[in-house]
Length: 94
Image 1: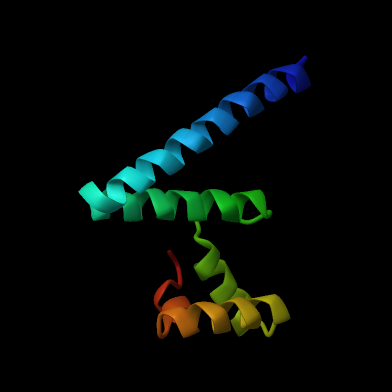
Image 2 (image 1 turned 90 degrees about the vertical axis):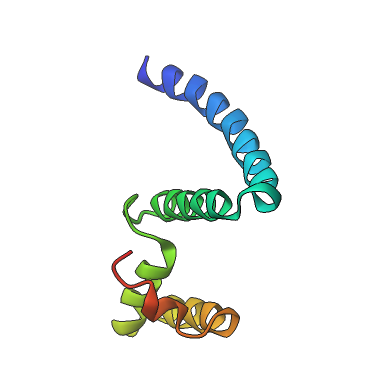
């Protein structure tokens, strides 16, 4: 029974995701601070979906992985730091 409930919930999450992305797009023009908040929430959800903590951003997790010498953390932080200097270091613990 729990799987059936999760399947139904999955459909609501799909609809919610579309609404979230539309709200973020609207906010980019009308309220950039809200757009950033939505982006950070999606970042945390993405981290949780990849077996990370739902309270941590992907950047923070990648920074820890890089400090442990894990290849994926080094690659992701290299990319993010290229976009914004010291992004991973500045996101530590977020």
